[in-house]
Image (cartoon, rainbow, N blue to C red; front, side, top):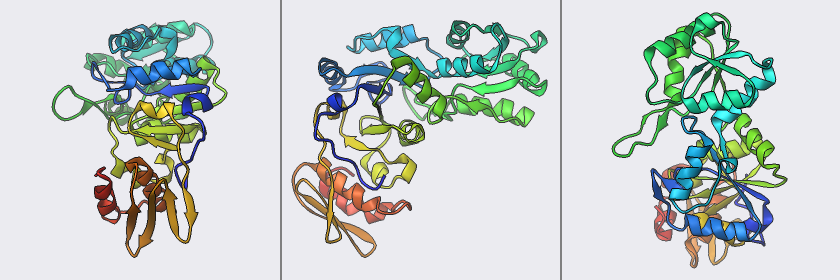
Length: 337
């Protein structure tokens, strides 16, 4: 990605399905992200279908849909795609019907496996063909130990996602499934097959479930949502309502560079201006960005997100990420630092 791309139509009209991340995009905890519900309702009216794609394997699709309705977004279980479903499909494609799978995780993961015709079990003595691990805050040492024994005995090891941390209601992030997976990995020396973002199985699951011809991945994290779109060959929209800030976008490595940028989900409802390049300057709207020695100089005025697009285009001219001090003054001028 050498520059944010332009689109002369609203994204809700240009892409048939929006594959939306949840936490930091639609809601934060149990609180709605401002403008999210209204923007998604308008996107649906414009004809865009919505799918809610989550790395969280501890909630069933029904539970996720209930939370969406709680924050004002009408949804059913069929609108939700989880990393547990992606793990279950991968295992069903590799194992015979009815094969036993030791579940180191929640009831949601068990439901996903049963839906794919597999048989969840809880002990290594049941000779599981695979171990499926997904996040569960109540995970016990005994179950982890059973999973490690089964992997040592030759069971296929699959993890729903590799997120090292998860957001906490207050305070610093807490250990996520990726951290718990390291216990079995360290005990056995076996690396799991990971199905969640940014790996391709969850993106494939979303495409299969929605039948999308031209999907748009929408997220707030560069290392899961945007990299997942990159790995899946899909376009992406980065919104700044969650983890990533504009500095993170400007200094991103190639696989973390989104197709489009927007403050929030209202970015689905509008065309996106392109970035022009001439005389060593990248221009978008009323802004112009060009390298001046070791920093990028930004001049002009207008919509700050047009300035951010121009700034990203200048920063992304090479595969090497720029240093934060090369763009700090420009972002300050935009009011986005």
